[in-house]
Image 1 (cartoon, one colour):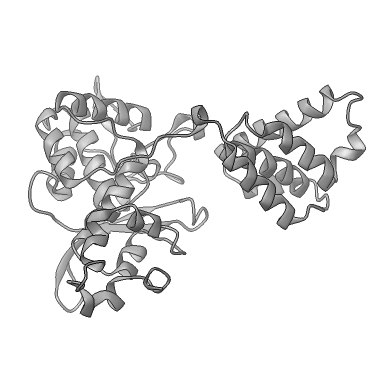
Image 2: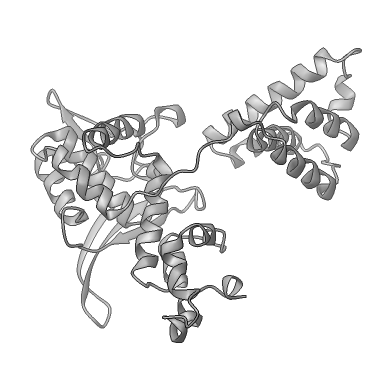
Length: 331
């Protein structure tokens, strides 16, 4: 029962880490006895991590440790590892990560990027219409790509876990100002796996308009209420839109447009930066992106375009700093 705490993909990741730990224990001279592997001692875990240093990335080492810890949790075995020492060890491994194991930074997708690749999508084509609609919806709702696409490695499409046509509600008049908003219900997300969450967007000007793209997709593919929202028609049958197919098609268009390849998280990063550059208060962007902490301020610190108005000799936006900037960044 406790294993259900984690998603299928997380269990697979942790399982791989646990396997590496057991293989390492088996190859020791002499092999580490089963009784010493659980509960694992701090000294044994540090020795295991030392063998990972310089060979694996910091994130990989973390997943290995978390796999061992999840194994303990699943079997109700006490976890007697000092978290301070563990954190120090993982920090050291991160610093020792070989260059070949470091992922290049993911450049954000911008409105300009979307507008430049738009001409390379044929919205009368079922596949292209679904791709472009998913692209614009993911961008403007600050969603994770996996929340609007299907990854077969994490399981097949299911209305219980994936967004469907019935999960879309277009409200023509919201709040005192009567502004139109389209809302999407995501049955399960990274931060709300049981009850799900809702994301929204509103109509935008130009080729990146998510409403026009969604309308084109629905007109061509017409998914049923229980079908995947961005399902597309192939030989008369609806196929849920898969993440790999999405990235492959978008990057084909990017190549034709002479642009760099897009990675999945680039959409979420780009959407955040777009709203911040519009002067939207940080707390509002934080709420739109469903962040519980200020961790996403990393996007702010890496964008000179956002920081520029705040760091001038006479700050251009000084009267609005306390509204637009999160407190921990102001300090």
